[in-house]
Image (cartoon, rainbow, N blue to C red; front, side, top):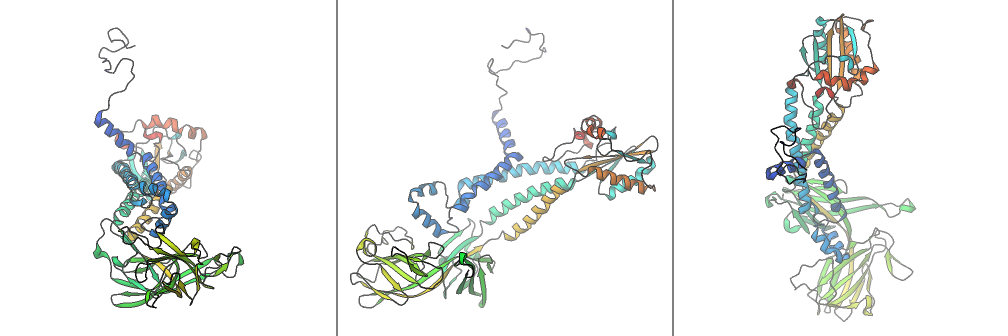
Amino acid sequence: MSRSSDADPLRPSDHIESHSPEGSGNGPILGVRGWARFMWRQLTSMRTAIVLLLLLAVAAIPGSLVPQNSSDPNGVIQVRADNPELVWLYDALSLHDVYSSPWFSAIYLLLFTSLVGCVIPRLVHHWRAMRALPPRTPARLSRLVGFQTVAGDASDLDAANGVLRRLGYRTTRYGDSISAERGYLRETGNLLFHISMLALLLVIGLGSGFGYNGQRLVVEGRGFANTLSSYDSFSAGQWFDDATVAPFAVQLDDLDVVYETENPQAAGTPIDFTASVTVTEDGQQRPAQIKVNQPLRVAGSDLYLISNGYAPRISVRDAAGQVVYDEYTPFLAQDDLYTSLGVIKLPDGLDEQVGLRGFFYPTAAALETGALASAYPDLANPVLSLQAFTGDLGLDAGIPRSVYALETDEMTQIAGGDSGAESLTMFVGDSIEIPGGLGTITFEDVRRYGVIEVHLDYTQTPVLWITIVLFLSLLASLLIPRRRMWVKAVAGGRLELAGLARGEDPALERAVDDLATRVAEARGGAGSGADGAATSDAAAAAGAAAGTASDADDAPAEHRPAMGANERESTIDR
């Protein structure tokens, strides 16, 4: 129970009672400004930045597990067809557009803001620390780790000062002592590392808004021009300009795949993919190659070979023998042996709309059940097996339809499956009649196809240089030690030397030994004398942390530069 100051002689006369309800224990009311300051400090703390960085890495995982519209639109179609019950989840969480989703962007922006809030105050703090003088010399150097004495007097301090400067220390003389400090590049490297992280986020975030990705499936012997209308799928950043699409054309001359043939246990495993192409740029043609891990650079864009497969040439004639369809039709591989699924839609030319769906087997082999399967990924025994449907293909409903999917709910199956008629199975050169007298289908030929992705990214060169700076600054922040050294002239013709590590510095004692040797040599001595022999008092070393605090209290505040936010303050700076 609270009591008034008049009733309690232990309280000062100017004591003001809390306005909070009696016994509530509530602290002061922060208000809007106080809460805003509190939230800002939480957001800009290094702990929050680390958590957000980890959260960003976790948030990127779905982008590598779930096919993305920007890089694998065919995979998106297949996943949605295989998992119709999860389509609502894919759309609700934007799992097919992870990197442009609201939740991923929110984490990205929060991380950027947190890093800015961390770095800017530390830059100001570090700038002031670099301009400050080294701290005053503690009264009792013997309490510091690495304490030593060498022969000398105050006249030798100039020589010691020169030695320290040659070793890269910033020095200041306080009476009969020299105070030196080095290692500011450690904090500089630390700050540069975080600035590089900020630059990396900024460059990737802004640079992606000006680039684009376009994919085109190309059959051997055919090509495409670098225009928006030529791509099967195209995605661009929000600041993309059509004028940035460079005029060039690419023709796929040959797609060569090398398979493992010597190792029986790995027979059929692809070893190498090589797309031989002809590039037309500025009216000039030149041959080139694209490999899986070796993209082709054309007019500032990178061309990647991202997938491949087979495209059987299928021709369809009506009952009168007129050709209504003759195309190399891409079939999408369903397994490592290139058992491939394809669809052909014939809305015109025949008496009815016809849909064909079937499998292509590069090296067909019969299973025990009589079904066909591919036994090898190369073209050793190509076979095409099709099912036929008649009815409404749904192309006039105004709803986008995938060219790789056939909706058969409103159609009647006339060949294969439960139709009672055999599937239309053909070898290369075979022709077969479509049931119902609708016409004939011929398996003319088969070629490979490759999916080429054209990627324009303005961030590649900046990201390379930023990554180099980031790596070098990280090395500096980890390897450069921060330490202080003192040389003090005392009675008896001796110079006392000691050091203090600002952070982890296992080489501190060795550094003091080296300084003692250099100072002795600089003053013309042969080394430490009897009274100047190096001493390594373990008890004094153990008491350094406790004793130095009282000694350092004598140093003015302006002579005690503050440490970086990521380093522990040593006792001498308290």
